[in-house]
Structure formats: C-alpha cells, structure tokens
Image 1 (cartoon, helix red, strand yellow):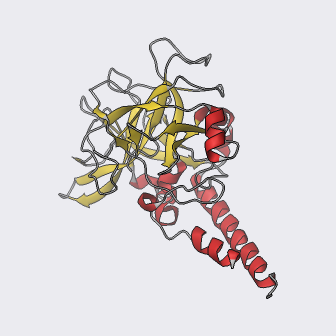
Image 2 (cartoon, helix red, strand yellow):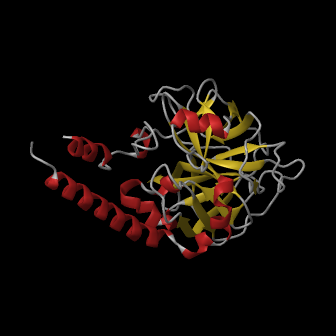
Image 3 (cartoon, rainbow, N blue to C red):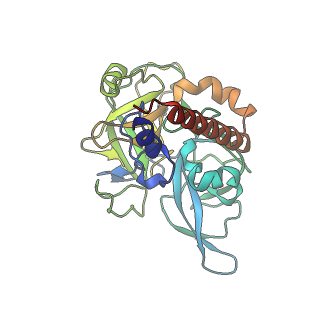
Length: 318
C-alpha cells in the first residue's frame, strides 16, 4: 500500500498557492509566501527589489493590467536573481515563455496599467526578459533559484539599485529583512497587499535549521515563522542582512543572503541560501537555459514514475 500512497502525494496537480512543505525529505507541497504583519516600503528604501509581473487582462488597445507574480533582486545592470518555482506553474509555461512577463523596478505598486514596453521613468523602470535560466537540478524546494537577464540595462538611482549576493556560507545576524507584496494576516483568505511591504525576519542558525528539518540544510536559510513572516506573493524576493562576516559586504549596502522559497505551517520559512550558488551564478547558469531545464525535468519525472511503477508491480502480494 505504501507505494500507492506515496504516488498520490507527489502527483503535481496543485497550484503554487496550494503547496505546503511538510518536510523537505518527503514532500514537494508548499504554500506561496507573502509578507505578513509587515510595514509599507518607502520610496528608495529597498531599491534592489523588483516585481516580476504577469498580464491579467487588456484594458485598452495598447495597455494591459499587470500584477505581481514574484519578487526578485537586482544583482547587476542586467541581471535579477529570483526563485525557479516562480516559472513552474502550468507545466513551466512562463519558463518557456518568459517574454510574456515584465520586470518592474522602482515601483511600490502591485497592480499597474501599462503598455509593457521597455521604459524608464521617474515612477518605474520596465524591462522585458531576454533570457531566463533555471537551476538544472531544481525540484522544489531544492535548488530553487533562477537568473533573469533583462533586455535593457537598469539605470541606477536612489530608487533603483543593485544588491550584493552573499559569497560565504555562514550564520547571519538574528534579524534580517524580507520584502514583497504581502497579505495583511497569515490567513490564506487574506487579500494580497496593493503596496510593497517589508518585515524584520528572525533567522535561525544552520544547526537549528538542521535539527528542525532533521537533515542537512546547508543550501537553505531557515527563519522562525512566528510574528512577522513571509507568507503568498513574495516568492523570489530578497532576504537581506547587514553586519555579516561576508567579505563582499559593503558599508551602507545590504547583503543578499536568501531568496524567498516556501514555508511550513508548523516549522519554518525556507529561503534558498544565495552563497551556496555563487559558482552557479558566475558560470554554471550560463550553460543551462530554462527551455533545456523543462526537457530535463520532464525526462526526470517520467523516469521517476517508471521506477515507482516497477516497484509497485514487483512488490510481494502477501
């Protein structure tokens, strides 16, 4: 009976919003994170965060209503770091059609009516996606990282700037910052905020994380889910700290240590540990684009189910 139960649990018939992590070892179900009990972000307060927006509907001949799909962090004039699971819905539809999305920097609004054309104004900088790379071994929640390359350089200013990715695997100060378009409470029915929110996040040590999850969690950062938290809509957004021991940290600038990934109702919130992927960001990601990942992922899933089927058929009847 065990093979039948396990097969039922992993069939991917859920949406991003419905998934809940029960434990990394046994499940891929998760709930989409959002900032809960946060504070409104002031203009220029977190200049490196972007909103990856999807079109909701056309409102005129030239304009559409765009809404936040996921967050992301600017790490250079052309690159944005985000979560791979942001692109996996509907059989990786956005993973193979990233040109349908827009990357918006400098704006604090969730929903915006816009043409979608590449544009730089005082209010916001709009960019199209020219290239998307998902980690080649992504299978939520492991290796939940993606690199977006935009079609035109961001113009750095007081409201749009880059953040430095962490390079050293270490414990971080207990309180760091996460941001996104969060819900007003932890209830799944709570509406998503119309404006960008931020919250202080209590970060656990690597040892605490290992104990809570009963496995090696070196590629993750765990946070306490009590009080302020990330909860649906913040996926891909930044977890940043300051006062770390990372040699790349600069005075007066935050350090990007994590990417919002998923959460567990009775354990912790999970962030992808940025420092664990410094080599991938530097060279490995350039060799593996999203379209190749989808083929790789489909083959892996097919082989996985074939192995399960063989196991089920060959089990003793007694």
